[in-house]
Image (cartoon, rainbow, N blue to C red; front, top):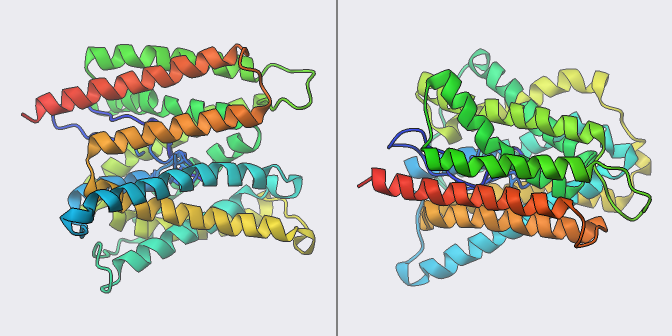
Length: 384
């Protein structure tokens, strides 16, 4: 499950703008490979992905890495360790997207989305709680009141649940490509809410990215007579676009809440993750359709456990990637995850190379990579 991550590129509005890697998921979630969105996750959350993500918890962790020192290995082995954590992050992001897709392909589990989200929120809290202990000391926990974080916790829940519903009713290719829209959506929200702007070249690069997603949305949702070809349903498209809006709003709110509460991103996430899980417990009995638990195959339980472990690995590895590399490397890793997930999703979709939606894939991915290049150069010039 990905909290959100994937617009894989940086997003900036002023000379002091941040540089981000994917969601992008992605996010993918952060938990599902939407991770590198802003890394709009823990934004996994994700390529994630999921999240965010591929989403958004991963996004929070990435931003916080800039604010907190993370112990680095000795310089002579720094490159080896960085490469190791990049490999772990990439494989975990890909793993969580395909694992979640397999879980949601089971009709008995497809409609238990809130329960699945609550499980991932618990795994996120457990990871952050562990990292905040004096033995590890990656950050110092700070308490907030439940009332203060309830709105953000609700947004966090929607940021995970809606993209996961999209994944359940969509092809992996469409799911991941659609997360590219996180970047222009966040930029639009920043403009209307905070009057921040992007360089003209960056805006121009986002146009083909949006067009490419539109092309993929159209052709991937067309019915086919080939039962082996995986397509995206109309409800999957609807969930995807609502999920993009929710993930973008969540990303924008994170900045606002950090300023308001004077709290770091990791401290904020440590507070809101258990609140999100707790709030879902009130809704789960009325919304989720539970399977007969005794009839759930053992391999499905294993997949659910692996999904949680992938989410933890995504978030943990992101600490070391940001701590030992830089924004350029992080952005490249985000794009690598997007390309790999899209490519593997295409291979497993049963579609032919000549399928028209592949044009949209190349246009969308090319647009978001161009955007990242423009923003990295812009940020480098502004920092001089």
